[in-house]
Length: 356
Image 1 (cartoon, rainbow, N blue to C red):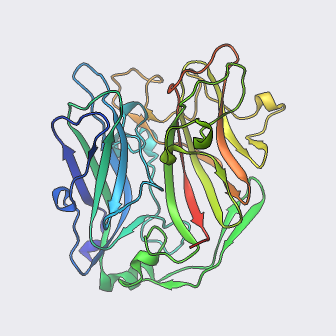
Image 2 (spheres, rainbow, N blue to C red):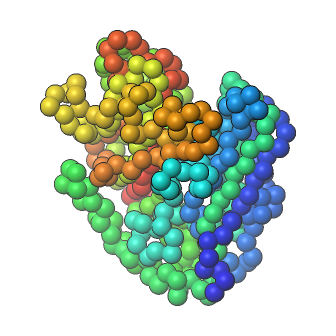
């Protein structure tokens, strides 16, 4: 029964220098992330202590990704580790305790239990950005649960498929048709958040993007879209043209607002969300002074020395992108452009894949 408690699964303390554009890839043994042969683990949440110099200069921990059983989860989970917009801050320093988790542990609901599953080992991989090298220490910890194989049936029972994914905001329902899964050591990696799932695959999703281009200065929509140069890499692409075999339920949205940013929201199947009296007044107000979708370090809504953070806010209702085009958008205030890399947008949700 001692395996039923939340525990530290991996602890990576990076010391010394890390140059720009370089990865650090600690082994599972280095971070204490190995399991016994009769154990299985699920990762619930991460904590990142970002590197900051004594002069309060943020260093560029650009990317943090999870490696489960040697498999990189970067296509689904790619976290910013820079203090200003860190996506997984230390739990004890999150304002109002609103933690971002990969899923709900110990649940047999497949749309809740999207925690990352592993059978042998867990570790992390980190990337320094192109501008500021790292000289200060930083730390990443992963938290979750470990079970013995013979405990799994008692804890989970049967994963309850089929399941329905509901978007009440737009009145849409997506049925996930799959036979129920009896949870045991052999089926562990076939559960949501596992690498050996049969279709439909259900995984947690968390991604961020910088605006690689300036906005137009005329309140036009800016898309974080790789094919048009709006972002610089696949793992920052926030534009989806889905057929009926792919879907994304958008659960959370955060934006670190730069100067002249006015609004942020979603556009799905040609409609803006949230809607307003006019197209120009649709979306959420996200200025540097009024921004309920702020995340990461609380500054500028608290002094820069304030040691607390905001989690990525959850939307009042999730939005389903399925068999249509959907993406987040930002707009400037029409007075001036939003400068290149002045905005960081983060999005969380559940990714559904109904193809092999």
